[in-house]
Length: 96
Image (cartoon, rainbow, N blue to C red):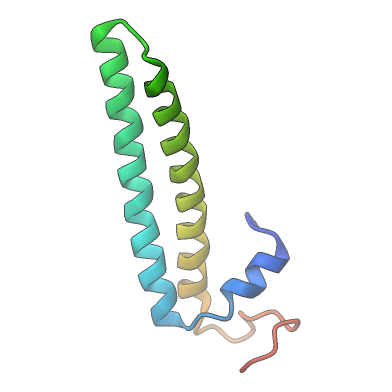
C-alpha cells in the first residue's frame, strides 16, 4: 500500500539506508511529541471547561505537524526496511 505519491517516493529513495533510519526515528519522535501536545491541550480544554481561541489554533497546528511527521516517519522507515532487498528501488530512479 502506497501512502505517498510516486514523485515523493523517488526523492525518498535517494537517501541511503542509515540516513533513512535517522530521519524515520527523528520524525517519529516529532509525531509522538505532537500527539502529546494535542492530548495535553485537549486535557486542559476538558479540565477547565473552556476552549481558548489560541488553544484551538495549537490543537490544529500540532495535529497537522504530527500527521505530516507520522507519514514521513512511515515512509522513511519503509525505505530503511526495504533498502537491502533486490528490486526495492523503482526502475525510474537512477542510482547515483
